[in-house]
Amino acid sequence: MNLELTEEQRLLQKTVREFAESEVKPLAKELDETGRFPRDTFKKAAELGLTGVAFPEAEGGAGFDHIAYSIVIEEISRCCASTGVILSVQNSLYCDPIHRFGTEEQKKKFLLPFARGEKIGCYALTEPQAGSNAAALQTKAVKKRDKYVINGTKAWITNGGAADAGIVYVNTEPAKGEKGITALVVEKGTPGFKVGKEEKKLGINATACCELVFTDCEVPSSNRIGNEGEGYKIALSTLDGGRIGSRSFKPSSSCSPTCPRKSTPRACSSARPPGNKTPERASAWTPLSPNCSPAKWLRGSLTKPFKSTAATATAANTRSSAPIATRASRKSTKAPAKSSAWSFPPGF
Ligand SMILES: Cc1cc2nc3c(=O)[nH]c(=O)nc-3n(C[C@H](O)[C@H](O)[C@H](O)COP(=O)(O)OP(=O)(O)OC[C@H]3O[C@@H](n4cnc5c(N)ncnc54)[C@H](O)[C@@H]3O)c2cc1C
Image 1 (cartoon, protein in one colour):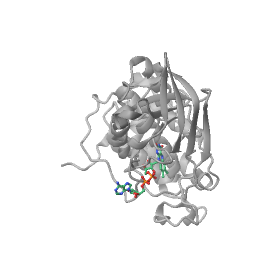
Image 2: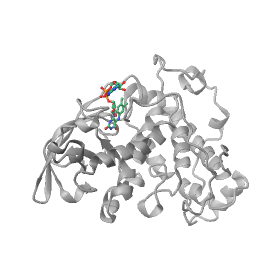
Image 3: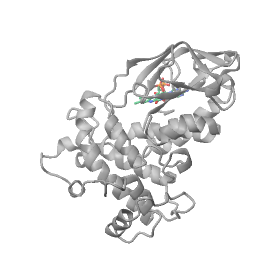
Image 4: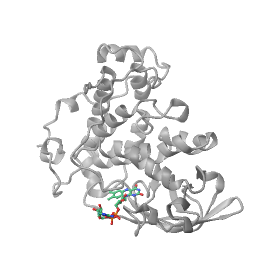
């Protein structure tokens, strides 16, 4: 088994690391202390293609594979756990089930702008009384003609307070238990839907992790992902993909000075004297030219054989309309997703 990253994966890793060092890390401590959701960083990450890493270009994604996705989450989380979790939820928990189960119409509306990072998504399965045992969820949706009327409360929903839409798992036929669970997309601003209290946590504080409350909230039946009763299968298979992201997290510099989990002083900005910058920090990420976005550069450079950063940068500067690489066009060595000691609670 070859555990080495390919050259293109190393280039991706270097680029994302530079972005994370220059754009993400400087904010990590403040974000963790204030709980401010990093919208600007999210937008910048979107310009690099990091909000839809492993989805096809036609669906708004960057067209990479899941090893690339793991590298992205690992590099971002290395500098800020909150930003890593936000991107992981956007990629794995919101975009992925729509990519796998959505219709073409749904993909246009509920995937494309999200994979592009123009909008933020969330995944709403957990309830105050239904965590590990998600099949016990009590949020109900009753079908009325061409609409579903939702009542119930979701808890611990990452991105929930900032999201433009969420996939909400509801029970449309409670007598059937888990076979009665259905997935519905609910958009921000839908009457009857409101963001509830923000969850209190010991760290990863900037993820807008909130309760979501539904009171006679009506959504069109065209917002249903998959068939009625397929929601549990969609939810659990989504968590399988979500584990790629959550196992790519590293303890990060977002630890506040008082955080008991500050286990990696090397990565913790608060443990480093002011002005003591890492070598990576010195070569901070910058867009290469006004005509070439970092995303185009990153994607475009991966379509060419890797020689050196300088060579690919030059190529990208003269080739701003370079075709975006597809998964099939890039040969990748099968290296396993990296894991870390830290992980989310069961079920996440
Ligand atoms: C930071 C954070 C972000 C989250 N983001 C999201 C999100 O975006 N969307 C979402 O839907 N949910 C989210 N969650 C919720 C998460 O999925 C749940 O916390 C998880 O499913 C566990 O549920 P619980 O907290 O109710 O714990 P419980 O289910 O009450 O479990 C508590 C403990 O009991 C153990 N346990 C439970 N059942 C059994 C059993 N049958 N046998 C043996 N041991 C058992 C568990 O392993 C655990 O150690 C998030 C949670 C956190 C902390």
